[in-house]
Image (tube, rainbow, N blue to C red):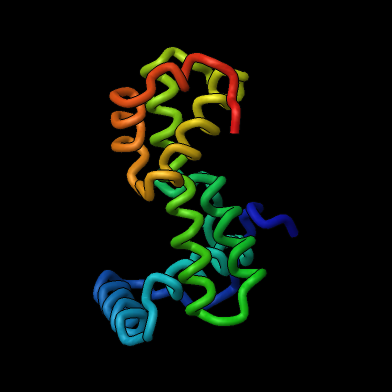
Length: 158
């Protein structure tokens, strides 16, 4: 069975709205009582996908993309503790935010992701941010434009 194939699960499902409401309240209470609710929700999503209860297209409707799902499954398979999982997911989220900001800056400059000019932008901007202990890429970009805009136009020399 593939990870994203939908197959019926032979489990007892609440029939009435009242039973479904109680079931929902119980599930929420159980997750809320765990030491790390967000990690448990991630593990539940991954397990539901593995069992075929939900498909990737269903999750995309609520804003969870296929890339995020695959990343979650990979993270779940490679960690030994919930703390490690939480840290891994935080790192992946930070990388996605970084890449998103980088693409926005590249778009402002008319650069296509993957192009040599975009790679130069990424290298120069990351180096400048690191050298100046800046964690916000937008601020690093603005400061770089103010201090040394010529670095963005020429070849990389680090």
